[in-house]
Image (cartoon, rainbow over all chains, first blue to last red; front, side, top):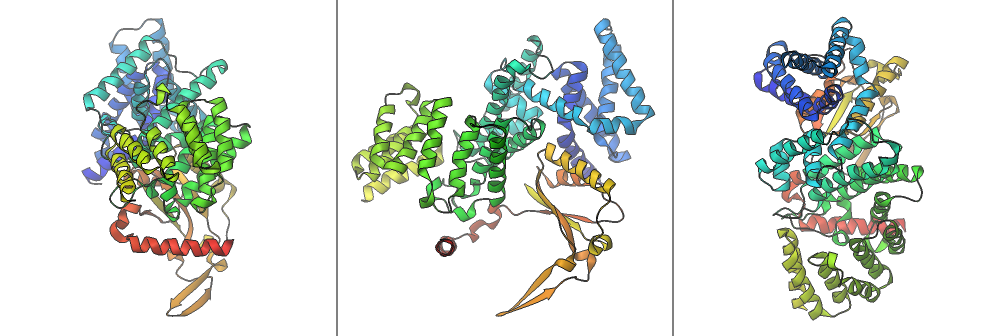
Length: 425
Length: 140
């Protein structure tokens, strides 16, 4: 193999193996930062050896063995052989011997469930509530999404050193807070799972509806979040909300390519060309929703949002949308996860199901809500309802306000377009 | 990116020989790994071409040809759709598949919308809309 081909192969191996490798090493050495360093050291060794020897048959096991050797060297050299490290060193040595004696046995064991459990423990660690939300996002994308620091920085439009610092600090915080590498106890599982799902959905949303910058969508972030969600669903198959979140993301992602016009301009749901929806993702979303429903009724917040997305997905044309069903789902959502944003969405659905006046009444009630101050969708929705009622001048003022408030350039263009449309009348 | 993984037919698959218990178990494990990595989007195995049909288009004529078809090596025995970061990653996954005996498996990138560029002109889209309206009115 040429050097370039080998390098490409090594990068691909890293992408496939690094999460499992770091998870397994964290279990062994108890420290995430050290585990990542060991994994990278092993990778450096691979880059030296593989171009000559070729990529081994089981590269994951090869990298794990190399990382363990480094760990042993480290513990021996650092003379930190207190009792704890002695135990650790012995365990590593045992592992090493069995690997040399019967590589196949260890390799097979490596493919079984313990690896999945390690990866699951790792997710709970990178999404631990002791970390700030943005640190959880950066660490999860880095260790489970296998994105480089540069890629994460680009995706979130922040300088590379900022992300680097976030990750370094996050690892330090985990160490100082002595966050254990283990599954949360049953009493905390719900809350901890919520944090994991929240991180994944935040990543998805940043890709789906970029809050700032020139692009309206960044599909690659959506793909990364979807992949994380799918992994989680296979690791925690009995959790209804995990399937609910996956369903929600698959259904929303199925509309990604219809959400953008030829010049990159946003196209809203009701104006989308539905023949461009991705049928494969749409079906996967409906299947995941079915799994969520079979595990738990009533559904949790993600499941309900997925059910709403499914109402749209099932409608062949906008006018076939079952708005009354959507209103009922928003009622349920407002009960278990009340928020002004949910109320605003509910108002839109009510406007569609029972006429713009009913919707406007609710939106006006929300106008005083402090949480929605500066939220551009509020004037945007209000403008839409006013326009439907023929109150054109008021509608124009609302669209202008919305255009002023949004930080996304593409959204601003869309809203300014609506301003112009009201002037044409 | 998405890739389609195309598994070519061989004499066994064309004769309708089903995989052994052991082969099925190996493939099951492999599929599980793909799912756990969030790579697998879809995948199916296909019955032999003796159950297949071909339609040949020539002007207004539509000739129906019954299977089986010759040229075994050109036939398809199954496929996957994978979500990966790069073609290299797809190759790396494919290398781990439990195939043997000279089986050839092909990797092809799936077109994304961007690839069509200006092809989807407003007129084309209007045409699509008309088609959709027709289909909808027929199914009602």
